[in-house]
Image (tube, rainbow, N blue to C red; front, side, top):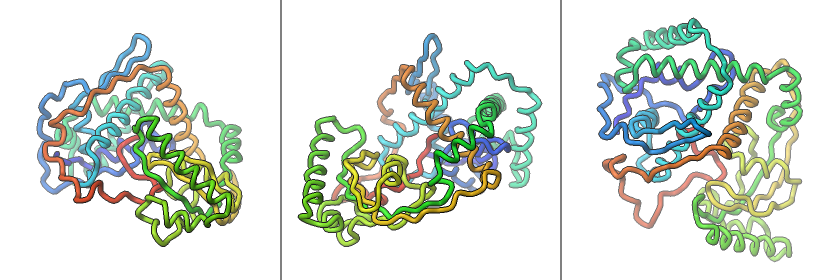
Length: 363
């Protein structure tokens, strides 16, 4: 699949507005750099095929195959990436965008067309610095000016919605509630991972959980140390065998997934968690050390507070929207990835350190 994404255009669309407020459907991964002499993206066979439908009340939005292919074209895809998982992650991201757009539509936030014009002018200026032009960049990504204006309008509406919520009083409360994040507090964590797929049957997850609880019982009875148990049982290839499950010092901005850090930063030194589920499987976590940071002055970190606050606001909003919406996702089209890579000998490709965030197209 071609990745002729123009970074000048799409990075502007991804990073959001100049206010410092997080934009909707903010991508965690960076767009692929443009290739020299890229051509217009090929037309997608079955571009109008519906892959997902999102319904809230009487309003429905559809995710099409064309949208998905254009979305995936923004990101470099490793040859070892699980195609089915990638498909569901990408569709999930586009569903989130639809949900957020539906929410913003209900807020009836009016956007001055001149603000949209100003943002498009910024895009054009960025493209010119890279010796590109807007029309060519749009064509190469199977987009038109209407798509871009709609994207920019949504980002402006999101910025204005966040700004209305992010009063100084609210941001100061958020700073206090998230002291470890802004102070740079560090914990040294170790873990034992037993792998299980996120969509595995409940019975399979329960079986893995029981095995993990049996390991914890051995630890509680002092039959072996946490490091010994990690070396013996952990299925994290990055730190099993001899590392004792040690992940070294981490902060809340280290890039570790929140399901992991939410538990690790609440543990007392030396204590061991119960089973913690993340996309990698089930973990036992032990904190072996903690270094307290110093909370900075509010004005020094206000821009960062707004960014994190907006991210949490979006996450919580989407969780609520998903509870109310009916979401129907179709199976992955067989021709979406024409030449999927062969699986490595011996099973799946080695995974990154479990607990570390894996960049992928998404929120």
